[in-house]
Image (cartoon, rainbow, N blue to C red; front, side, top):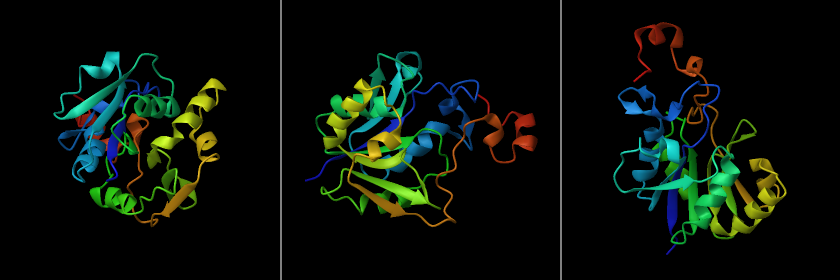
Length: 200
């Protein structure tokens, strides 16, 4: 039986945001929890949050493993390599960024329906734009991620160029990939920010 882990990448600098954005409150839920819940509701196990030591104590979720990077802020390719290296009990890894509050379980299920071990990765595409941080990676990519890191090549595109990838078309009207990089990215920012809606 194929075992699929659910992974939330939540160890970035949030440099454009000005503080750890994954802990911002949006409609009664922390930002990273939208990605976590979308994975959890589809029954993926184990659930893993990739983060660093300075942030790790702020995650209080039950039944979730923390993958703590000793070298911080090395990017998603490094995080994926670290997670696969330390998770022997999974064949696939469904990776989601921590800043997508509109991610849905239906999107996750659609991606899971395409899982086939003949692929190395399953990546959504919308309007010809790929979304490598809302995608599935087979554990066999580990060797390629390690080699790229040794060459100091850290872009996700560098990895995908070496893989057998299944690209899944997502309709343009589905807004699941809207992400939050800056405070001004929040909907209705100009009005609601003045009320402190997005701050702890």
